[in-house]
Length: 337
Image 1 (cartoon, rainbow, N blue to C red):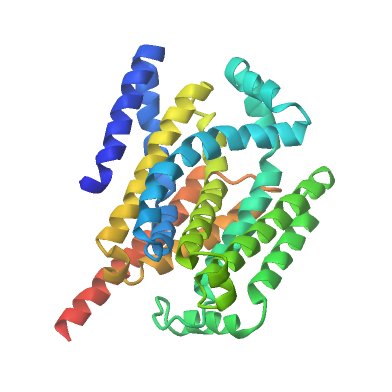
Image 2: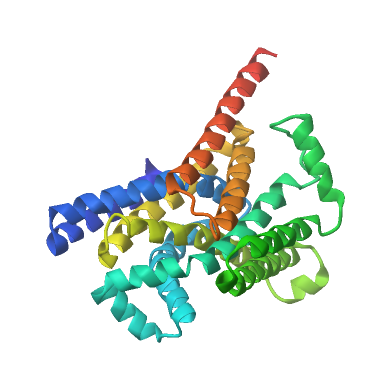
């Protein structure tokens, strides 16, 4: 429970704040939104844990503190406002006022920005999935020979980027003409930012003398991993914000509810790292990356074909559940051997 102590405290504070500001209904909505955020982001927590376990302890702690501020105020409040401001050519201040005083119009503009952000999230998350599934250093396979053959594609230079670009161009072909520019812009930014952060992360973690000249390589590696996790969170968070408007139009309640959920996702990430869960349940990481790959494709398809959020959540939960079940069976076999 130690890993969740801070999350529980934040939840209690948000519930009390919601009650005094908006009443008992708002308190219930905060809990509902928090639960939905956690249930739809479990795969995010598993992938976060796979990155976090390689980070220095000080950056693991900063992920919970600094990262929490970025997650709640940055990704779930400022980021959507910035996207709407960019897409509508309206000032940031005016969009903020719109979110607070005219949430119906804000929600409409937010939904109209879906194509741009779905293309960004789709390409970024597809590359995240490929970074694990096509890693030719892996020697544990959840799906046996089929997964081993898929992994062998990783030996081809730039195959992840090539496949992702092909998926982006295919999406561009199917999307309506008025949204094609948004698809290209969002998709290219997703590919660029993934390439930038992952390249800098590898550079700062290397033993190269040039990297050492820039200062503490481990520290800089922690910075880049932190940035990577925040971009990953951004890719997950936007659809959650849009979905929250189907439950309530109150931006303060949405921020509280999604903030509570984001806090528990981060606590769950730290819990998985401290307990060594990914090492104990060996296929859990596989399931999470397959779930993220599926989510990435769903985000790209959603630019031209609406897909219910419940379908997205069920796919992720099913894949992770199957991976956990397979891990438990494998663990029993190892004990009997």
